[in-house]
Structure formats: C-alpha cells, structure tokens
Image 1: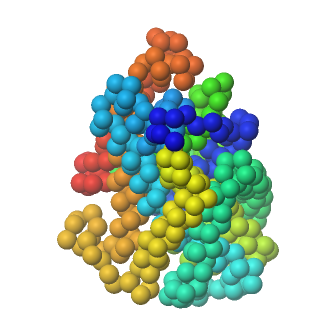
Image 2: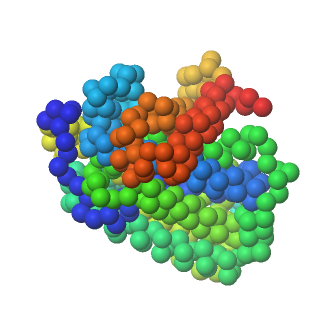
Image 3: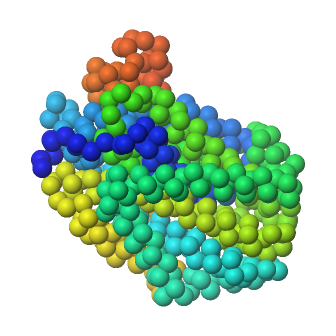
Length: 460
C-alpha cells in the first residue's frame, strides 16, 4: 500500500471514536500529573487558567488535528506526505515524523509509571499501606524502585497488554478495550470523588480547587497551565491525527473536539476532588510533586476508613487511564507501518518490543543506572537520569514543538477551503473566524512562549 492510499477502516460508531479519543487524552496526565501540578501552583487560580487554555486553545487545536487526519485518511506521516503532494512545503512532513517519534519515545517511559500503578493495585489490596507513616510509605516506594526485576515484570506486562490490544486492530482490539475501560474509569472516579468528599476535608478541597487566589498566579504558573493543557489533551502526540483518519465525513469535528475537551477536563477535576479531600484530611502537602500519588497518598489509604478498597480502586483507575493513553500512543506507529502494507500484528509486536527494549533503560535509571546522568553538560538536562531526560524531551520539548507546528500549519499554511470543509464552517463565518484567530494568532504565540521557556528558561 502506498503512502497516498486511503484507509478503508473506520470507527463502527461516533461513540466509539469519541471514547477512543477521550481515552487517548485521558491518562496519567490527568490523574498523576494534574493534581501535583495544581498543588505546586496554588490551586484555584491555576485551575481557572488551565480550564481557559483548554477551551480557548485546546478545542481549536483538537479540531485542527482531527481535520488534518480526516483530510489525509492515513497515518500521521502518510497524511502529511499526502498534503505536501497537494502543494504544501515539504517541511510540514516534520509534523508527521514528530507525531511518530513522540508516542514511540513517550511509550518507553510512560509504561514504566504505568507498571508502578499495576504493582500498587496489589500492594493496596494486600493491605501493605495499613497504618503506614510518611517514612514507611517512602520506604515502600523506594523498595519498589530498587527491585528492578519486579519492576520489569509489571512494566513488561503493561507493554504486552497494550500490544495485544493494538495487534487485533481497530474493531477487534482498540474499540472493545476503550468501550470497557473508559466507562469503568468514569464510574470508579465518580465513586472515589464522592467517597473522598464525604469522608475527607471537602470544604478545604473545594476552596483549594475552586476559589482562586490570584496572588499565587505567577508567570511560570501560567506557562505551566498551558503546558499541562497541551499535555492533558494529548495535543501534538499524534493520536488525534491518527484517530481522525478513521473518522467518517459526516461526524462533526467541532462537536467532537468540545466533547473531548469537556470529558478530559471533567476527569482532571474529578481527580482533584478524589485526591485533595484526602490530602487535607490527613495533613498531607498538596504540592508534594510527582510522588503525591505513589509516596504520599498511601499514607492516607492506610489510615482512612475503607482505605484498602479506596486505594485498590484508585490504582485500578490509574491503570485504566494509563492503558487508554498507551493504546493511543502505539496506534500512530502501527498505522504508519500499515500504510506501507505491513502486517498490523507483526508491526505491533515489533514496535512493542522496541518500546520495551528502550524502556528497560528508563526503568533501570531508578536502580542499577540511578547515578547515570549522561547529559549533565546541557543545562535543561542537568541532574536528570535517563528517565528524566526522556520525560523532559518528550513532554517539554517535542510535544510543544509539534503542537506549535500544527498550530502554524493549520493557521497559516493549510488550505482554507479544505479546513472549512473538514470543520463544517463556512469561509468567513463567525465560527471560522474564531477558530482562525485562536489557531493562527493566539495558539501560535502562546505555544511559542511555552517552547521557549521549556528550552531556554522562563522569559519573564
């Protein structure tokens, strides 16, 4: 099959597409990263700015990615190659290649954290957190990091399950997986939020998340809010371009984009309402950083009524979110191989094996290679191990760069007629002008600031 052929596979229904797209966006960024980033940046004011970025910039960019995908009906690389042949500058092929590189690299370290969540399901279920204090919880987490063989088992299991799902195709693997996991994720999250709000310190949690204190809103926090919005919505990852390629022409992209943004933001806020009442009730620190989920919350799980059930469900929730995102990471890679006529199952296992091999170096950076910091001579990588280097490169460099390229391409280079056709907006209409202003000017400027700050430091 050539790169300019058209994919014949499509989603079985609009709801299947929406669940897959929401699942691609919803992941550890919502349940692991969002709570601690909110905690580090003072709560309500950060949340308000984050939500504003989601809808002012995130929705138009989701529309743009889906429009690119449906216009090409191929993998991200195939689609951009096809659009270049229609008269665009060959430079724009870089969007396609970065949309393969980001998920491939991301899967290598993302799966390590996902493996932690799988392991912690059984730690919570077996009552290991019962009566644990801060030192004890930290020791449990450190012990888990030190045992590279156990880490390898959970990491490998996660990769295996992700590959198994993708190897069975859209209708045989991806759709059934998200149709089960995404509703289950929402049900578990709603239950945990209600339980936390009724047993924890609901008043302080609501004040922290809803009542904005703008004195805590620094320029750095604003930049982080935009970066979190891009990260959480999976903009620039490649999954939305790929999922858009399987989308029939009669599905509204604007409505789909709004639905994805609302669902993703709802998950992030529900995660806050499930976590912060517990944090405040048991005297924990909301700005604990990345260790909030795995080192800090288990202290509360060990003290609260029904902590074994709550903790177990929480890490099941975390695992489901990780799976729906990892599926969205592997699919763009396999779709690219499919464009070339290669076997989906074989290429899924080949890509999975590559991710596993590279991911092992990410995993070992917490134990056997813990002191190995090969890029200390580069400022942004100083003090970072292999995991930290990969995480920073993907989340803070490649992802915002790709989001910027997508904004510039759609806002300045993409055919206006083709964009209006895909979005269903009449050229010159109010809706089209709003999309164009957001994508062409606001998103381009705002993401440029993020890219600059991530690479060269805070410009303010």
